Image (cartoon, rainbow, N blue to C red; front, side):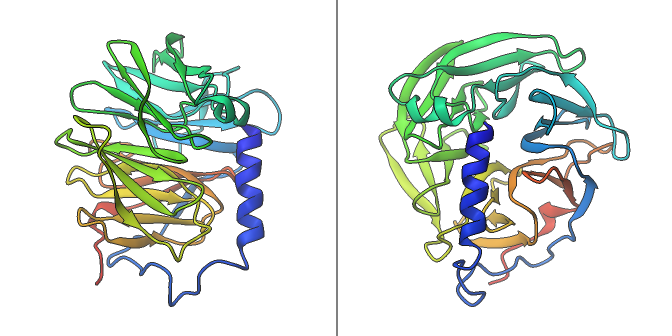
Length: 307
């Protein structure tokens, strides 16, 4: 995990002088929120999710100690360790009131993951942190998403094979997208959207019933160093992606139009919407970064493409 993060962060630093000019970059969204840093100095952060009751969870690799999963009961409360000594935690998703957490999200696993899948998912009690292995045999478990019917998908940004998990059975290489990272399933359950980290700056759309049907849904070829990372969606099907190298959060509407929701973040790695009316509320978007920040974008669901 640390190697993956270092590689991307280094590439982003090298690329800062080579990013597209503002005239060529994606436009700003209308009604963009002002980002607010809620927590800082939390270590190198990989993924984030909010539970039904509005509590926030994020994975961290601290400068001292082992990878861990932290939980925050409400804004302003101190993050507390829910589970420690995790094996390179990756993407997260809710499944039957338990939290599924990717493990083995490392450069070594990802580089070999297409041919020798060694990663998997943990099934975790979100109250106690108790966990057990849910499935093994995934390429990297970097991005993780759940379809309305309960099917789980997982990605590998150092390979091209996407994994499908149904009834705890893994189909490795169910579909193929080069350097797939953040995942989101549309509200109807028809399509899986896949953000690409390396190579093309694009989001691919996979038809779930026919996974050989893959097409480009949105692309930004001028943003060669954006390094798309984690991704989520809102209830209407609009996508929100962390552009790690660009230091931005992007909104992609249902027509595939891209606008920039937030600038100036230090290597954002994942995004998640709040839930409910209390604590980390629905409509607010929460981002985590490699620099250790947890950032709130209040009312992000009200942003729009300005063109």
